[in-house]
Length: 319
Ligand code: ACO
Image 1 (cartoon, rainbow, N blue to C red):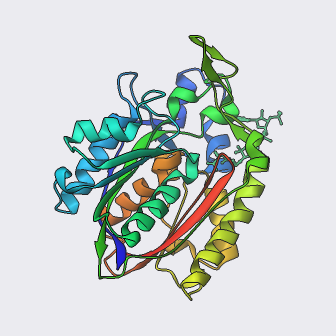
Image 2: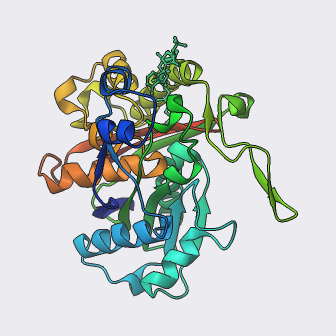
Image 3: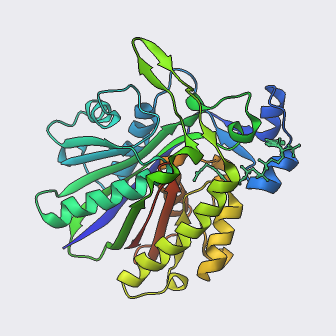
């Protein structure tokens, strides 16, 4: 019995916001700096009324439609997010209510940019263990809410969005291998350190990052995770049809792919137009490449992420 992706969907709020638009909004930056350092040309930013569960709902509906599945048939909902609608209940439960599903197990995963890879790995374990037949796995973020718009070294990097997949128990091959890791010793190089206590925000409520430390760490662990994940399935990373990495930065993506021997024409890149949408970035990239026909049924896909925690992981699957 395999866990197989049967539907894919994505959602982006509003219109693209270009690098020049950020300059016009008062960010002390320029297009050349952002493009040469990150490859990012635009991102989507949600209006203040739009929450992660709203974006998740749109992505989930489109994934359910493509899987020809009714929301009532879903028996597991996992939402990966670091920008939940509220402290509790989970964004997964809010999504469940919006979908009109009753009774599915629903919980959130907090593994930042690795969240989708973690959530997909968990869904696969539930399906393989028996009991769960159809899971909805979503990555949804409104990272614009946790950005310090006066910190040009971070605010230009991120965007908002959601991506979703339906994963079903199937005799046709699906997820072939997955790995997931964390090392909390590195928690300080990428964090939102603030908290809510006694009705007040205590500490810093914005994303802080040591960009160069994250860069070095990311390339090393993404290479390692891809090697281990593929080795478990007896294939080499350079044999996959498509590499769909977390979309943080084209330089991280290209350095990792080069080390793995994966040529540029087999990498799905959306960071240029979406920015870094954290847990949403991988399913969003997947949905774009399925919709435009690049990704076909039967192809081997290697998904991988790295993020705050630090956390990282990879999933190899036959689509
Ligand atoms: N526009 C113009 N200048 C800027 C900007 C900006 N947006 N941001 C920083 N600068 C300036 C700095 O002030 C500094 O100027 P100075 O030399 O006069 O002091 C100069 O650019 C260099 O700053 P650095 O921070 O050293 O820039 P660096 O070359 O390291 O690039 C970057 C920063 C793009 C963040 C890089 O470190 C990186 O790619 N890191 C990877 C981290 C990443 O992608 N994180 C995403 C989230 S984590 C994740 O998803 C896994």
